[in-house]
Amino acid sequence: MSEEARRIARATLPEGLRRETLAVRTALAPSQHGENSEALFLTSAYVQPDAETSAQRFSNSEDFTYSRTSNPTVRSLEARLAALEGTEGAIATSTGMSAILLLGMGVLKTGDHVVCSRSVFGSTINLFAKEFGKFGVETSFVSQTDLAEWRAAVRPGSTKLFFAETPTNPLTEVCDIRALAGLAHDAGAILAVDNTYSTPALQRPAEMGADIVMHSATKYMDGQGRVMAGALCGPDKLVRDVFAPILRTVGMTLAPFNAWVVLKGLETLSLRMKAQSEQALAVARWLEAQPEVDRVYYPSLASHPQHDLAMRQQSGQGGAVLSFDLKADSPEAARAAAFHVIDSTRVLSIATNLGDTKSIITHPATTSHGRLTEAQRQAAGIGQGLIRLAVGLEHVDDITDDLLRGLSTLTTR
Image (cartoon, rainbow, N blue to C red; front, top):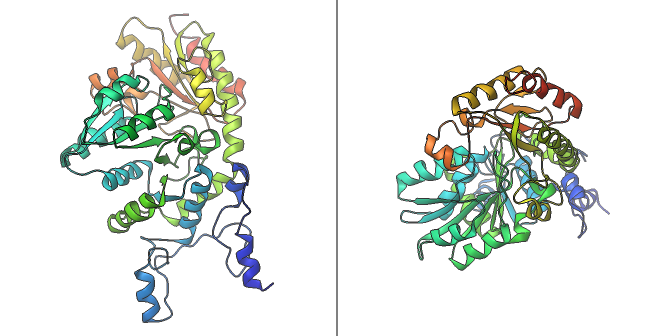
């Protein structure tokens, strides 16, 4: 076997490999140097051997000509994401929000209508309600869990997109992906699912009928809070023929270095998601026993309204994010209590990100959902006493001890 054949053969994987193996092995073929870890290609342009070849390559989006349109490191990440989600293709973007923007630019036009969960990430609400609204796209926001509301919101002939995030940020509400896919398809629309919280390590929406799977790869796919990245996974007729030409034009391109970091992060994704889900469940159970806590939101808890559905859809795991409401007599008292608990921590990071190996605590009403109106926050169930915790890999007792610093010194104890 020639050296070139050996090089290509190593990247041709057998059928039927498990997700854990695909997360480690899926990539473009190695270079002539035979590197075992995928190479990082930091280049903006690619030298062409002659003008005729250059012309041919510029007419074919699969060839490498300019890194705004394609890059080998980014292509490896896209191949790995598609393999993990079980879709024909994937396209990487600079952030998760730019992935949703690309989705809207690809499937919506003036006069179209979107049905979206009102419990999605705050910036997602603003993107649909404000930014897409500027261009004549209307969005109806409905209950995450009430299928009757989704059905009633459909406008025959104009509803083109259903958009859901499951579990949601920060209340961990879970929607029935199969049921929503059926409703969307009956209405002649497509279903896009934000799978950021669960990742394909726990949940594969395409297997349940979703047409597009969206990711903020900034979160668990990176896994250590280092870079920004986003992606859309779906059929080639959308990824290659619709989204790719738009990305080439508008330039919401993922940087090769960021792609390489996420590519490496995916190799430990399954291990991290399992470990962090177990940690989160232990913390959630502990929080349920604290007298200052009014309610804990976490899919693995039997008290969660969609517990059974979540366990079916999410491989029996709840993910690594939970939220909890503090007991208080008024919104002002609730906010003061939440700030006290957050400010009393000495181990947890006070930040708005999630998906890190370091546990992160935040106050959604003034951060991730801070730009929404009070009415929008109330509709989404985001109260002033709500705290979100993205559980990392510290010892679970150190996490609970850190929370107890604030909980034990609240006046409600």
